[in-house]
Image 1 (cartoon, rainbow, N blue to C red):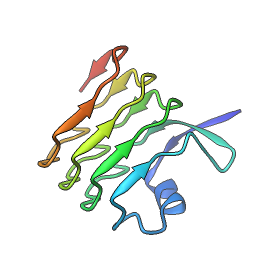
Image 2 (cartoon, rainbow, N blue to C red; image 1 turned 120 degrees about the vertical axis):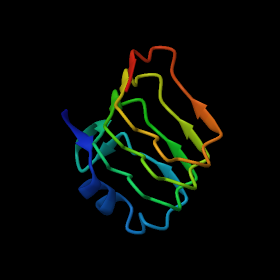
Image 3 (cartoon, rainbow, N blue to C red; image 1 turned 90 degrees about the vertical axis):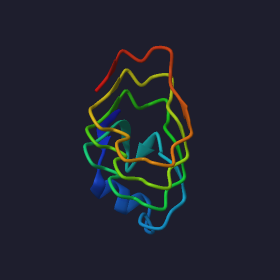
Image 4 (cartoon, rainbow, N blue to C red; image 1 turned 90 degrees about the horizontal axis):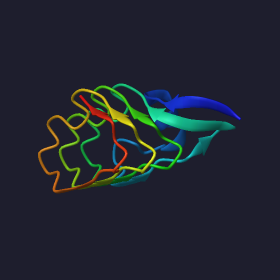
Length: 108
């Protein structure tokens, strides 16, 4: 199966109302591709997101992937995520519940 990062362009395809969505379940597959990562700045400044669930297909979260998601309160990171890049949750001032996998190898 083909693999690719979940990028800002894919967000627009998957979420027609990305700017106003409050809950997000990132798909494990999109357009025939396995989603293996969340690209840099993918959800940057999505100010209405409150909850995010990341699928088991994802192994990497890019730089500033969720930066400035000021309403984000809950995020469940799948057990397959091995790395979270710099500033992934910077300025997420409402974040209260983060479920991190035991196998996480690097943050920042």
